[in-house]
Image 1: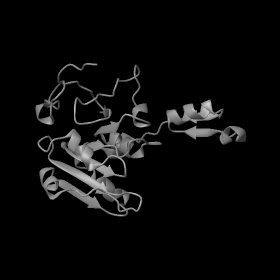
Image 2: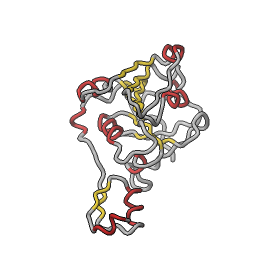
Image 3: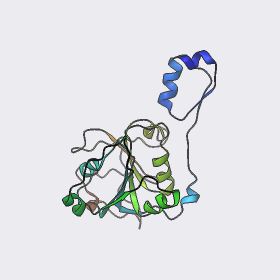
Image 4: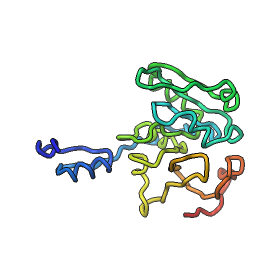
Length: 212
């Protein structure tokens, strides 16, 4: 409401924020979406049986356990940055062994080291329940990785119903909230209760017909 009194133009990366600002009387809102150039990330699609998560105080390792069994994946690459603002739950030795957890703990990771860590995973879990822009998951999409994200701003604003694909598949059990599955190429519905072991290899040709 204070912005409405200033008469300023506002650049917004989040449609939900824009809508709220307009309801409060803010004018001159410029809606934009961010995107990385995929050509900068050639050859980084990764292994679909390796999952990456950067814990940032939102989605935690326990969510990985809810989404995947230890038989579904070969490894979990987990990034943590020591911080007074984030309390990390300890991972049991048995979970480290079962999920082959590769833990990276550092107060700061240069871009080249960060990208090197994320070269192997083919699946990336967006780290927060909500994002103002979502730079982390957008970068992974540009790499060609499969991105799993909570269905909320801004993750659910990059795929629109009726414009591209309708997303928002809900797992039958084990996860209490809805998740979106973003893939740079296809979205194929294979039915409930199917683990990664039962997913056919699409590299050699088309898979089952997509459903809605």
